[in-house]
Amino acid sequence: YVQPTTTQISHRYDSFRVLVIGQSGVGKSTLIGQAFGIKQAVAEDEKPGEADIEKEFISPQNDRFVLHDSK
Image (cartoon, rainbow, N blue to C red; front, side, top):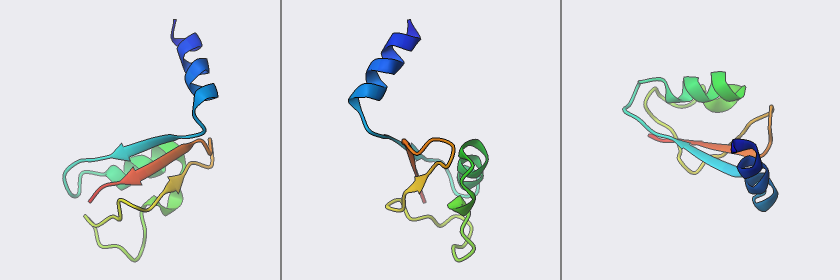
């Protein structure tokens, strides 16, 4: 029963936003990078534990997934 629901959702919405939240330093950016193939999720100019929740990361594997990393 999951497939019909997934198909209905994918036809109804252009993208899916995912917010990854958690305590500082637990690997949220690493999770985004590894699970969705987004290398820029771990930015060189940001200190560990700092992330811009407004910044969008779009998965190269599926551009319908838009992710946000919390502080």
